[in-house]
Amino acid sequence: MDGSRMDEMDDFTLLIGRCLLAFLFLVSGLQKFWNIPDLAAYLDGLGLPAPTTLTWLMALCEIIGGLALVIGFQIRAISILFATWCVVTAVVVHINEPSVLMKNLALAGGFLVLAGSGPGGISYYGNWPERDVRGTSA
Image (cartoon, rainbow, N blue to C red; front, side, top):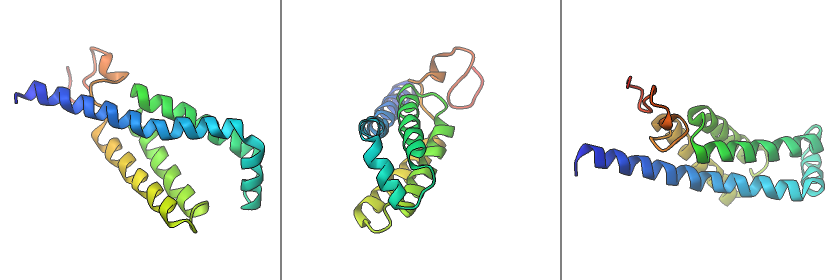
């Protein structure tokens, strides 16, 4: 396979990977909006401050961050933030749930890989002619 065909495949797999990672956060963010009082009560039971405000912020961050992942906007920053998010929620919320804890840690690893690889060519930045996604000048 020639190099340009491999680049296209890499771009496509990065797009699919971003969408799959985003799906979890988009659905989770929407579920939080539908269950603000229940989740706020749960967070209050964990002793977290301002649980209702925290629930709204979590839902907004998951939806905005999920959409950013889909379009490929600020992928490195979003990926590092979501990796941190996954580790913190694993330790703070899911420490006694081994399966969920491991899922969150694996997601954090995936986000760090995405942060290192960048968004690929099928992304918001990939559509601007003056900027090459892989860090070399166009």
